[in-house]
Length: 374
Image (cartoon, rainbow, N blue to C red; front, side, top):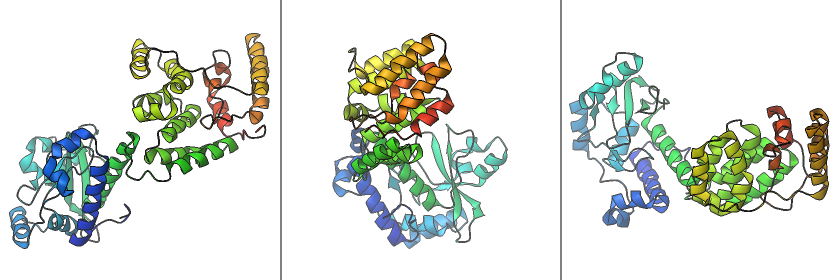
């Protein structure tokens, strides 16, 4: 089922949840699978028997209110759920769903606008990582669905508003898929290699935005190469790229494995340590990549190398504008037969040349076609 199709009836929820169960069990990490137990893994179903008419009538009588149709249909399909998202491990059932003010009264004490909402909200999640799923009975759309929110310890207040419980579930499923893919366990890996190839072609044509989008799409399909090249593009477009080098490359073994530890050390580590010059950063790199020096940096074409040497001499003599002019004139003729080299990354790390590359020039580098010499 396409994620844009929100389930609304019990039958649709059964199909949607069966697919979600299959996806989760196929890509979840070992720890989460272990918590489920052999019986649950064998069944392939993360839910329970659906709530019958008597259970639904009883919970609505207890709450003093008719449940929104979409959430009610979810309970009809499965009275509770396990592993609904990255941070929500169980959902409440007809036996224990209730008002937040009764279950977690300390969250409703401050009296500001958010807490007024929380004081009237229905709590539908159970075990979770410092977060709560809430439905607001005072915010009802034309279909009778209650708005949904996540309150979490890492938000300054309530998180994004969703039109319905189903919209929140779909968003959490998308989040689970994105996080799994970035760990190298993609739900839908097909087509990742083609996206990387297309991204490379666009990058060499100077379509930085299109290339970045293709690489990010490949990363969402679990491609370590796509994730790496997305960070290479970001190096020219995002001043705080060292966070992405740490979080999207060094912290993910499948990315390092896909492109090789030597390449990571030669190409992105110098930029990481340049932006994060601390003992902690060096120790982190060593823990991830080991003590070896790795492979040499990018092998540049001879014509481009000659231009860089000329630019270095000009820069050392203080004529930085002339130095940049030499680099700029040579850039369109840069090329590499290495499929993982999409731009002269060393311009950002070379100790003599990197001061020439302002943020505006960095953007210019990746938006300039680099195929004329190929």
